[in-house]
Amino acid sequence: MAGPPRRAARWTSNKPRATWFRNAAQALAERRAAGFLEALDTPLAAQLRKPVEALLRSYDVKPALEFVSATEDNRGVALGMDWKLDLAAREGLRSITHRQRRVSCRVEPRDGALRIVAFGDSPDGAPGAPGLFSPPDVDGAWDLLQSAARALSQPDTPAAGFLAAFDSKLPGYEALRNGAEALAAQGEVDSTIGLTTDEGTDTARTLEVDWTLEVVNAETGIRILQREAQLTFKIERRGQTLADRLRRPAGFLHEVAARGNRKRPRSSGCLFNAPDGPVANY
Image 1 (cartoon, rainbow, N blue to C red):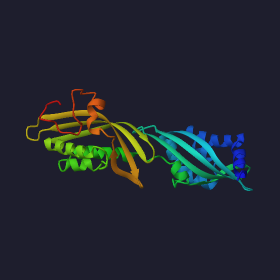
Image 2: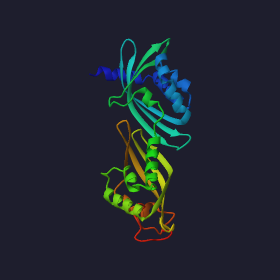
Image 3: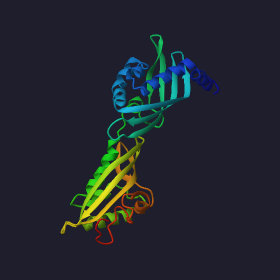
Image 4: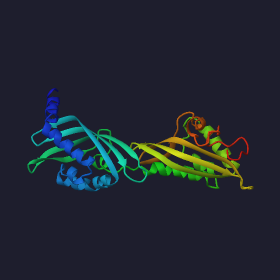
């Protein structure tokens, strides 16, 4: 039982070997796809070339790795490692993704140099090398919020379309449903959002948005409600795709006045509640 840990410590404490691995990781930080791929055996490099190049085209990468196990044999070494990648989009929504995986890889000499010849899945079943080094799929979270905002502006069943995005088990859901239905009954709703921040993992995103609502009386054309708020949403992936559900903390229906309605401090209601009566420039 004591043998493998000593071999692991002996292998991972070897400075040239550890430096070789960290140099490969540093190539990602410097956006040098070729420098990273040089550490891989030819078949594996061919498999990863497209995802790595796509990742580095669109994201700044901050990598970190830690050795957790090593088992040597007469051909090479099997390594267990924790990889951490912080991925910051350089354009578009400017999202930030934190990725951490425990992976196994096989290192063997090839043509007088060490090469990674295999990159396996982690014990928890997360994808191996292609998934670890591919661009994150973050558009679905923002698309979900946009669809919820657009639903409130639809003439047919606006509240139902809006509520379809929310987890029915979240605290305050019934109050949210009642408020959205009452709001939609007041008149024509103009609902718009703007993204402030988007950060999270491959399976859970936290988005901060500026949300604006206006309600116009359909008969008179008079604006009876205007509200603006800064809100935070947590969006979770379930299965292979982002589930159409948003999670909000308890107290969501009463947070706007205290937290978010900075542009209109006179507002004292929930963003998605109907007004007590027709109030111009609410």
